[in-house]
Image: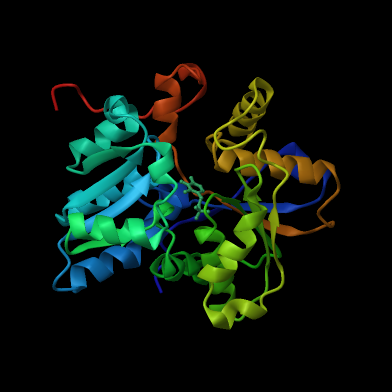
Length: 319
Ligand SMILES: *Cc1c(COP(=O)(O)O)cnc(C)c1O
């Protein structure tokens, strides 16, 4: 199969010091707009929508800075598929960086409160939505469903052609990406050590979520692990020193990582290196899951400096 994203060596004095070999899988640049793991997760979902006669559109869920909503809006725009975003939060957010792009690409946005948003997986709520949006294909938050697993598993198939490695690190939000990587190992009959760095607090529950998403054939994989201690206070939370360390790492390696997902993976990786977690000569692949559009909202809110980060382009107000 064709290789969709490149793998490149990553250099840092710490890697030399701890005698590890590090490469980075650049899913962040797999597509100019549909970023990283969201591209992988949407691939077979969109194929399903386009190949099924009676589907009228796509409906999904997300927060007001969601990488998934941003990616889905553009993907549907490109394929001319009507799409609906059910957004957690107030209508005021509709003009923020992420959602103004989603609107620009034609996604219809509906805002719901936190309490209603918590029902996003309940069958009663989904039935209600289905009645309001007849013929719409409902994709769960983050795009994490069985079709997503097939798309993500192709990362391992590509890597099998690109390199040999012992351990792979990925950030974890809903768990769909890690589940896809486990399935990919199964498909290729390999057993890498797959380490998921969870970016939310109290994320232990994700273990059963990941097991639920796995094809039954992948149940025997026992070398994957969730590391739940590296969330740095919770989802999208980080300290000034976390930010400084990520900016420094970006400068030294020449690859940009953002602080919500990939940057937290990097901070965890550095901590693990310094704890002596990896064995001498270990071959490590870091999965860059993308999400750089999220910088737009953080810069807009004054959380990050424009000098330190690649600043994503805003929708022009006339557009
Ligand atoms: C959504 C996202 C993740 C988390 O992926 P899951 O499949 O939900 O675990 C990681 N990195 C980035 C950049 C993302 O946008």
